[in-house]
Image (cartoon, rainbow, N blue to C red; front, side, top):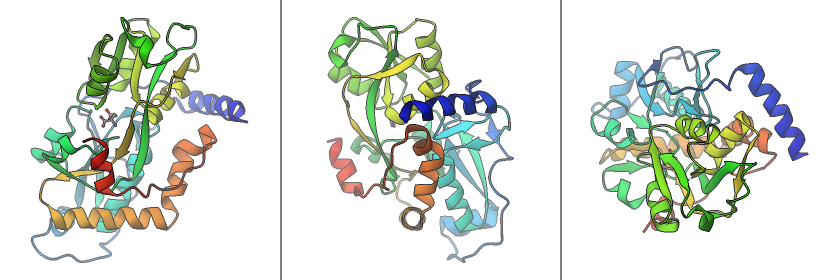
Length: 297
Ligand code: GLU
């Protein structure tokens, strides 16, 4: 069953041109998102929600090359994925247009701090260290750290086999520390975006890639000569990042996410972007922010 789904997916991917994934710099996408409607709610003057309504737009940092969470579809030019659906839900609740910009792993916190984005929804793990600089929403997804290799390479079966090997991950990702700790003898090759890792593993410049299972799954979707190996390395609860100290906006985002989880939109989006391809059912995470933060301390 699983195999059939993967085959079907491969066909779909080829048909929609998802294979031609490239990093897009700081390109943005003005055409994405559904059409805006009149604000359904009113907010107090001075709140971020009111300011965003007055501006008519919310700027959301997502990945552009990480299907199925954030991907700029090369065929349509639209940005799409699970993180994009959540961002659109925030925009819809405010009644504003969602403008999606690319936020690479290493740009996410600077983008919030300098106001480039209002929210980050970019496969970002909630960690205590990051929480010192920005605020996190409640967890909206829980990924797992894994290793990706070529199927033809049987020399890597788990984390211990990474000693002496070249391993790719994204600059500014949690895996820089994870690899240092769990595979201290590996040579880590940090890159800007995960499509760079995909290219390096395909052309043999690195032996493996370490990151979240859902990101690696997106790459297997593009290239079925790749595989996941070994056990789970880490638990990676994803949170939306917002500017430190904006408690009203944080409460608003948490409220949008709680409704998104409870009214069936979470399950629908998960099935659309992940479940239908992997055959795996999942419920929205119940993990609290505190539990997520405690995982990294
Ligand atoms: N979730 C991990 C992180 O936030 C890895 C994925 C990514 O780099 O976006 O660092």
